[in-house]
Amino acid sequence: MRYTAIIADDHEIVRRSLAEILRDVGNVEVVAEAANGIETIALVKEHQPDLLLLDAAMPLARGVQVYGEARRWSPDTKIAVVTGFTAAGMLADWMTAGVDGLFLKSVPAEEMQRGFIQILAGGKFVAQEVADRLEAEPERETLTDREREVLALIAAGHQNNAIGDQLHISPKTVEKHRASLMAKLKVNSVSALMVHALKEGLLEEHRQI
Image (cartoon, rainbow, N blue to C red):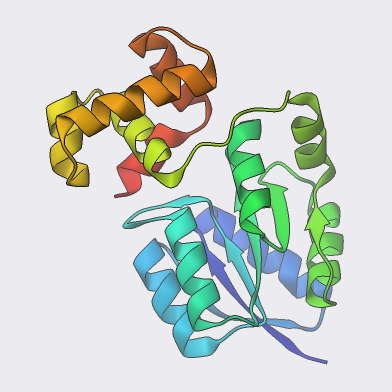
């Protein structure tokens, strides 16, 4: 059986490496490559691939937005996230989202190949390095999408008024989210919030918008 795949990553060298791994699988044709989130969504809609290899952070659209749109336009497509972010919190969020596969870019090619074969066969695959990081991380409070947006903007240095303007909410609501974040993350300062956001890769999510 022949399979089709799309590779979405804003770095050409990563796309080339992933294409080589897929070619070694032997029965997968890379039908398109994308360098940003908007292009990825359009190509998935057009090609309806069997497999999408998705970077967690690309220009023009957040990775989670691309994931949601890909699922909407091509529900049968298997989606594997290949990310450079190693923060356990972000990896856990992708697991919660329901991806078919989760890999760090540092995962050996042989393990990626095994994972892609398993995913195309209808299974799920979590790379060992990802599993190790998730196991080592203590259980944490889950943040809402809005809290993640607010936290990302705090990490980018924005004040309540500017955050409210960007998210179309009042500064008072922003302050409530800020207080909720401090309580959930068990921190007591804005600087500690910023450290957490940077660790979780949320500043990179903000830069994609």
